Image (cartoon, rainbow, N blue to C red; front, side, top):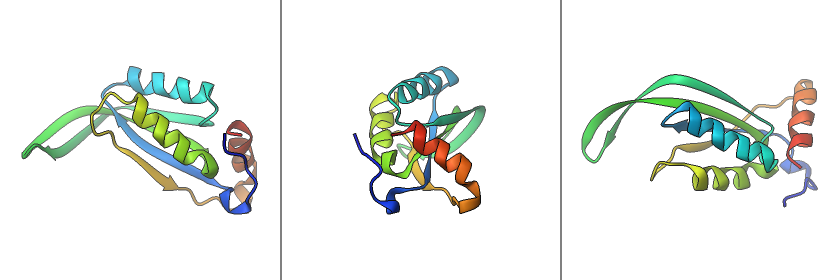
Length: 115
């Protein structure tokens, strides 16, 4: 388990992910919440992705999930998301969040939920 000892590890990271459906995103979210790897997730169903795969342009319905975690836990959370994901090549992007001091209450809450 990673502990918050270095101030450079303070802050929030958003893990942007796409899923084949709401159920798989929700199951992963509950696992990461139980393991205290994330503080919360926003699940946005009914997304559409258009992409090139194996040389062909493809369009599919997908669910977008935004997982919020402490910077110090982002690597562990990302590794766990990839392990839980049903896709062979899942989209899991770590996006550092601008967390000014005025957002201290939210940042403190995320940090306390992801020890």
